[in-house]
Amino acid sequence: MDTDQRKITPKKKGLIREYAEAAVIAILLALFIRTFVVQAFKIPSGSMEPTLLVGDHILVNKFIYGIKIPFINKTIVPISTPERNDVVVFIYPLDKSKDFIKRVIGLPGDTIEIMGHEIYINGRLLEDPHGHYGREGDNGVPAVEKDHFGPITVPANHLFVMGDNRDHSYDSRFWGFVPVESLRGEAFIIYWSWPNWKRFLHLIE
Image (cartoon, rainbow, N blue to C red; front, side):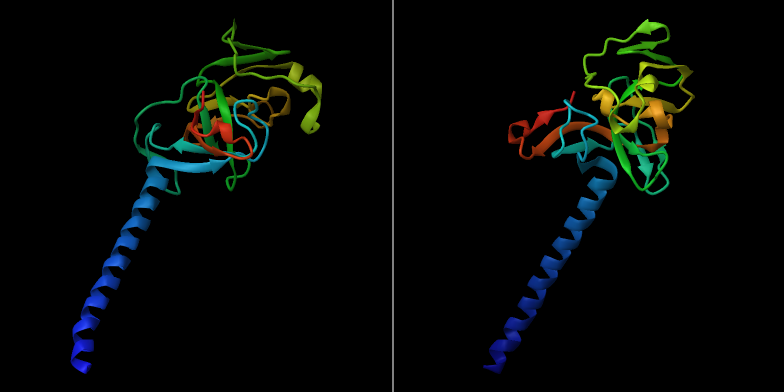
């Protein structure tokens, strides 16, 4: 009986070791993907409605704007630059413990002016199919601030961003520009939404 136990024990130890190694590899791979490739986020507010709804679970491409050193957000391998109308997740400039999601409206060097529901970039009216306007004065923001903004020029290496739900969005009109280095990545798909389950695998435009 003792002899049989001595024969079985090493096999059990080997099996446990294999499972442990597989678990460690899986964890390291997940951390690598989350840090450099793709990360999941949940939409907590209505500032991007109707594009994104409260309860949408989205995936963000962290690779698209370059490979960054974790924690200091310094780009070591640039890949592409943000484009107008990209939906981006970024570190909120006034509180670096928070992530915000908005749409890129102004690029570095652009002069932005907003009059009513019209956005002018470098003196030309922006085609704005994503902008949604509701009733005025929500979120404690005086309507007069929304009716006329600018002109103001976007600094180098910064972006001007707005929520699609224009009258219900706390964005660059109120707290300023987003440093490009603060970008987490570009939102590209809704992988789950509850109770709006029909939005499953819906591409973000």
